[in-house]
Image (cartoon, helix red, strand yellow):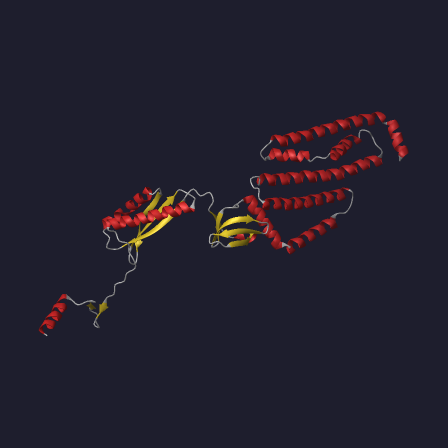
Length: 367
């Protein structure tokens, strides 16, 4: 072998010299591009696609650049078969690892870009797990590619990895379900830490989003611990970023209310709402109740703060009560009238008639 290499140097010294020069030039060019990636990353202050591209380029290793340069000029110098085979083998191994590094950097960079506004401990833990899973998957694929290029039959290995992955997935189905639900919460952001949400019959404030469960503080003070998968299975109502809240009042007045007074009631309600800073939506008669004429009032409070809404609702309600008292309007309450009848079906008043009262009074005087 040494004799072959010595003979190769003696015969092809000029081609070898040119190949080395070209290889150095290729390496320097690749190194220059790698430097541009560093400048590109530093220039883009906010996380974005340029940052991801710069980080990916910076992950290019010097070994990879050397092997690429050698692979590109190897054929020109007509090296011995063993040396050429060695260069091709090293190129296959290093290129597979380098591509895995690039793909991992792109995936992690895009995920970090998507969650750049989050800085929670949960996200840091999630990113650690994501990095491990992505690294294992990519380097496993790289190893299979390398073995396949070396002529190894990887069919059994791929089948074994597939069966093993299915077994692990089934065994840890609950854990992975909650984990992916946590990632869905972090990336899709249906709610964030500190927001007040309603799910099912519970209203609570989100205290911490974990990888397995989410901690919430109920409005009544209890601490709720709900698995992430179970939480996302329910309809979630978020009270964050509300521009306004709508308030409804059901108002019933007595049937003795004059029609003109009932007709003027919506305008009276509108004036009361606007006088207290609310946005009148609608108000009016909605039906004949069992013991009342039913009206409904809807208005908006232009604030997302529940304390402000609560106080405004209180003020509007008291103003309605005052106006009703001043105008002689009466709130209805459940009443019931009883009528009695004689055995023959004739209606009998539940109190004596004037004639019966007079007759009864005369008998008492004679006595």
